Amino acid sequence: MKPRARGKLVAVEGVDGAGKSTFVRGLADALRKDGYTVSLWREPTDSAISARAIAAGTDQPWTAALFFTLDRAHARPALERLLDRSDLVLSDRSFYSTLAYQGSRFPPRDRPGLAALERAVAHLPDRVVWLRISPSVALRRVRTRGKPPAPLERIRTLRGVARTYGRLARAPGWIVVDALQPVDALVADVRRHL
Image (tube, rainbow, N blue to C red; front, side):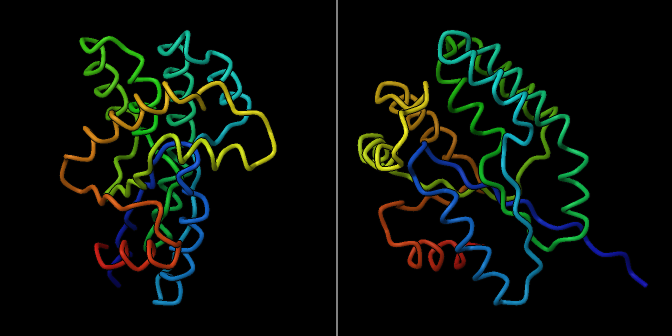
């Protein structure tokens, strides 16, 4: 009997307020109806490590990046087990979030080092979906959550993050969609590309 092929990892990226979590659930439901075994993943995975990364905030981007990378390295075996028993794993964020959020705060000369570190530690996604949205619209969405914005949920920060995603999305394997579309339209759009 032929061993089961490892599943594909599809990462969903975008600034806070882009609708990643809602989109991931909608895409998972649609793909399951198509007969695929779909598992969900979310980064960061460890709340204690994540809290330390968030506490580093925008003032210490290397520290924050290293905490997120530590979380990713610690969780990688669990992600790979999930890929072994799924056709697709949909991940709400990936190492590209670290490149976009923390990396956008680095001097340009330091960004390749962060990218090399992330690629050495992370399980690389097979495809990346970027939910592109204006940072100002995303922040309006964030404010409807009824809690104060997180330290990185600031217009200047999100503009830098969006610019970084724009550069990253030029690479092969990225699917760029307009996050202002209704979720059903977004799901249909991405399913055509997958």
